[in-house]
Image (cartoon, rainbow, N blue to C red; front, side, top):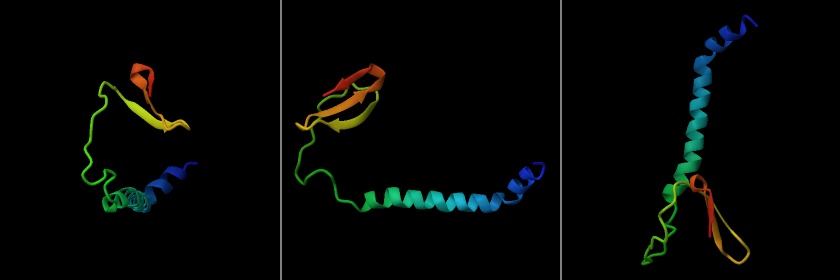
Length: 80
């Protein structure tokens, strides 16, 4: 085990290059498609704020009837 840290230090530059390539690929696959995508808002549509008293929301999900649900965790509530 005494040679293990020395092996890591000796290969640090190679490890960092691999990490950089992986980060570049993840960033590319995550961001580039969204830059090329069309808007999710229909042309001419008007946006309307329905609520705004949330602290932190997660979800969303819907039921078979199409009702939308989200969780407001800090306020300990599920909103429909």
